[in-house]
Length: 279
Image 1 (cartoon, rainbow, N blue to C red):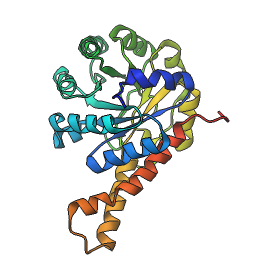
Image 2: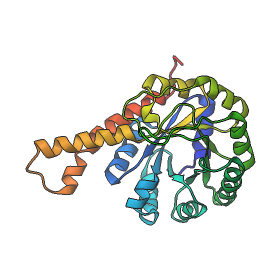
Image 3: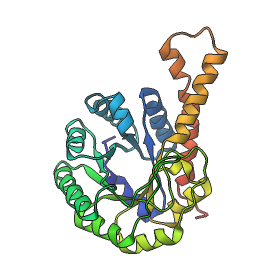
Image 4: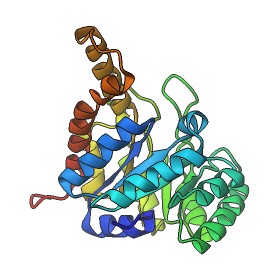
């Protein structure tokens, strides 16, 4: 199966009213589990390398790893750089095989965000790589507070930069361990009215499952970044293995024990966003 870009998969998702999971990858085992879940349900997914993961595993290593998994998969897989804040980070991602990049200019003034995002888009599109931008600011649980997306700003960034997807702040928050985000559907509707590209929700771990499904099947939100709930699953599985299988000492054997529970919860997340005859 060929490696996909956001442009390849999100248009169909928006038309068909369903969502695609952006899996925040932290290692080989969870990446394997996410691809296995995608294949089990025959649904495209997005493998994402965020800033923390890129510090742990440089793009020179993670890019070929992601591409290897995508090329062997039976469904489209997007290899995505998440939350790059510089042109150079985006260039490195493109150079090392990623099929999609996010330029996060959410901390910049609007005109500067547009200018820098457009520069990334111009380069990325020459290489058939998609670009996600962000407007407003998605804050962090017990950290920086969010700044709600202004619809007119969203319209300018999406159209003037030529984005393939736009991340918005409508009550979603990064790193929430409980599903307590209060999504402002009115503000989201206002954004949808003036933005034509697919929308993205970061911090989807904190969004109630029923709301995630509503957003996927009733709005223009097509990409859902999910990381925290999978990190919680991995940590729980790892602690269980270490506590109950004390004869194990080989790290490969230990870490492989996390794949099955990760795949199961990943399948649940994918299934929740898929269309059904009832929707």
